[in-house]
Amino acid sequence: MVLVTGAAGHVGGALVRELLENGEKVRVFVLPEDDISGLNGLPLHVVRGNVLDRESLRSAMAGVDIVYHLAGIISIMPGRNALMRQVNVVGTSHVARVARESGVRRLVYVSSIHALGRPPRRTPVDERIPFDPHNAAGEYDQTKAEASLAVLAEVENGLDAVLICPTGIIGPYYHHGGSPMNAQIRKWMKPGVHVVINGHFDFVDVRDVARAMILAASRGRRGETYIIRGARVSVAELISIVRNLTARTGLNLLVPFPFALVGATLATWHAKLWKKPVSFTRYALETLASNSFISGEKARRELGYQPRPFSETVRDTVHWLAANPEPNRERAAAPARESPARARIAVVTGASRGIGALVARMLARKGYRVLLVARSEERLTRLAEDIRSTGGQADVLAVDLARPEGARAVYDRVIETGEGIDVLVNNAGFGWYGYASDMPSETALQMVQVNNAALAQLIVLFLPLMRGRGHGHVINVSSIVGGFPSPWAALYSATKSFVDTLTTALHRELRGSGVHVSAVRPGPVLTEFYQTVFRLSQGRSIPVGRFPIRPEAVANAILGLLRRPRRAVYVPRRFGAIPWVELGFGWLIDRVAVLLMRRQGA
Ligand SMILES: NC(=O)c1ccc[n+]([C@@H]2O[C@H](COP(=O)([O-])OP(=O)(O)OC[C@H]3O[C@@H](n4cnc5c(N)ncnc54)[C@H](OP(=O)(O)O)[C@@H]3O)[C@@H](O)[C@H]2O)c1
Image (cartoon, rainbow, N blue to C red; front, side, top):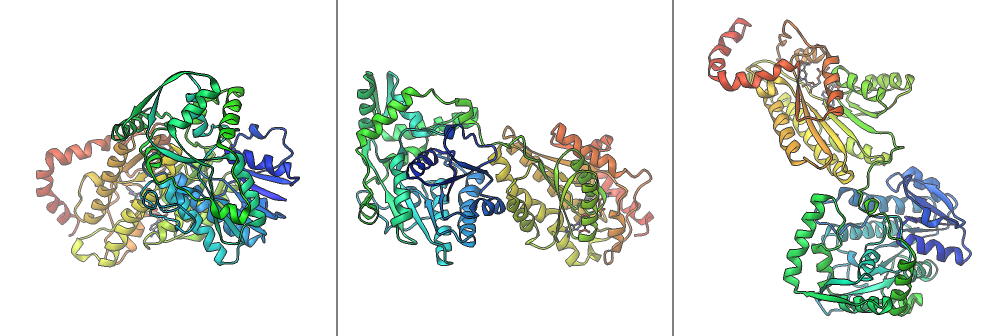
């Protein structure tokens, strides 16, 4: 039995066909939401899972002899793509590790020619060039290099793995989203004016890549990398072969490289703004201008690999594209979004009691699977059992967010589950009341760590995942004192100002991205907050006020934000006037604050 990850993709489709023709029993590993209609009618054993979920990989690899790992994300867009990094790097590390632990006889990993460093022009690119995780060309190249190094690290631990680095892949068959190169050839098959950039690249037939993988499985040397190339052609040559095959006339508009770069930058902005697919980015152009003198000598010598004539590849691709309708463009362009069947995931910090515990209960009632985070394991476990007893889903993570590694532990836990995150409620926090000159410096440090550093770290860690999906909501629990600097709560007020500023800035930064960041600013809430403050060394008891707010009101406000995202809400709403009071009468407050404090016995 062989296992193919990423079988719903372009190479995956070709590989499973080739394997079946060779009489192999094939198990395919695809995402729960993957459309595998392209594999309809083929005798395959389908397993649904996610490379980010080690358990699903473990069951897929049971009884498997050879694993072909193809699952990955390709992006030619500039900027960070957290989901691509997760899937390509973390996912590949998981595949390699689980393959070793499951006793798989051999892993064949499809890396990329782009994972290798880029030597100067006209120096032949061969397997002596190391993988370059710092490649300046783009994040895709870096993730493929990091993933390849992760596989090689597992080889050091005893895994038998072979890596192949194909050049630009073209050929018949597409997956549900369509292959970018096939989409380009489809455009050239139509009459009209076509923009031509004076560049070359090496293109290899998808069926040859599939054949090379099978050769690598049987003949490749353990821990070795093989470049799988086809033919080096210019863009103009490729267009002219396509035109001859389709008997179409057309005009080539040769664009000088510097102009093309400007055009690519504009096309990328346009694509980002209108969420459209783009095949013409700076990265794509730089690839065409890069060193394409690629040697396939090692694969020929050791694997017996020979690419087919390039004309055959283009002919079959054109015929196949002509016979098959264009894939749905909207679907091809859609970013990876959550599967409707997947439970929504919420992380709530400070969930052991008070506002956090209530929010967690309410989210679970709304169908969220909630990760409860705080220090008191016993309280968290009791709450999780309570949620489960009413049909909800909850997990527990006991962690101290005052420790620098606390936030990272929360992130790692979410990544381990492989299900992503939809909502992050940054609620953990504490105060201290009294003259700052009496405050123990250790308490000050812990307050900044819990109320600010951990909150900021969690946001920075989770935002890329949310942005990658184009969906998510971060809700930060601030306080009215964030906009009303309060004597005797100086540091606490300052930590909440930090939360407010960060929230507002991110709210602006993320507008239109599908990700929301909001703050809740409650007045005094009747929770254990006050006892905690009093228990802290050298702290005084805070006057709760005559009309304390019930924690349910704050929890309701948080749930309300999920229904109708906004920058900030005050609880109660009338406290929204407090920052205006500060703005207009700050001078007066400066004078009376001392008197008020004296009345309280300062
Ligand atoms: N109560 C108010 O008057 C009021 C007003 C405005 C804003 N707020 C804000 O609302 C949030 C929740 O307060 P609350 O009233 O619900 O207070 P609370 O009952 O004292 O709850 C605080 C939560 O934070 C957790 N926490 C504290 N230190 C932590 C640490 N080092 N690591 C991990 N978790 C930690 C606590 O859990 P463990 O002790 O188990 O770790 C607890 O679950 C806080 O951010 C607070 O600043 C409160």
